[in-house]
Amino acid sequence: MHDPSPEACERRLKLTLEMMAAGIEMTRLSLARRHPEATAAEVETMLAAWLRRVEPPPPGFSLRPLPT
Image 1: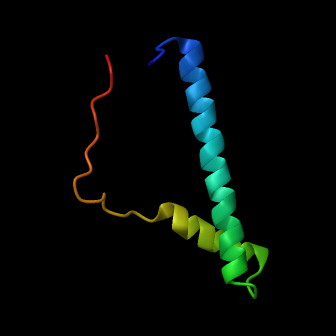
Image 2: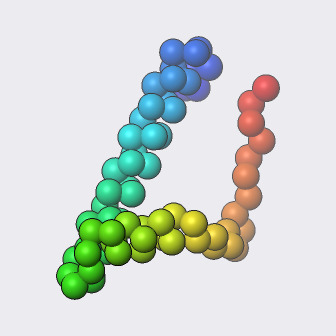
Image 3: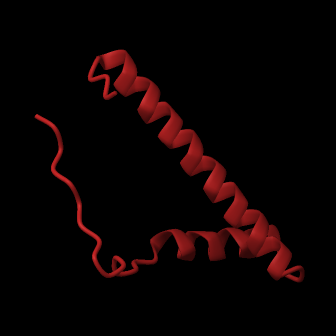
């Protein structure tokens, strides 16, 4: 059930941001493993490029309207 209370929205946003941070850290570690010769600064540069990439949505993807 969807809880629209401010507290529930805050919890969902916090969880979303924590999951995003975990995903970024996993990508950083993956890049470092795939490029063992890279310095920490080079890995950060690769990570920044990965974060800036734009990919088209998959076929059939559509956003649902936000609740009002």
